Amino acid sequence: MFILELTYTAPLERIDALLPAHVAWLEQHYASGAFLASGRKVPRDGGVIVAVAESRAAVEALAATDPFVRAGATEYRITEFVPTTTGPELAPHRQTLPS
Image (tube, rainbow, N blue to C red):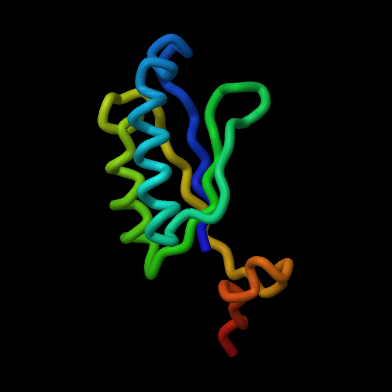
């Protein structure tokens, strides 16, 4: 599982102009099952996405397709973690630590 932290590198006016394309991109990846949760950071200087992917390379490639990234309006910081404990809704994504 991955935490994708977005940090805006453009003014909010530019972010707002790109927002419809970004939301459509999010919806596409919710439909595919890659995204589990997302939202704005507070204060509004970026956002966070919780994602699942087969590898770090796959999630990096996915992040590169974000309209915010393509427009040079945000940077991503990607953190991989092993979700060993979850709420019931995320049970299908639980993992065990390697031995």
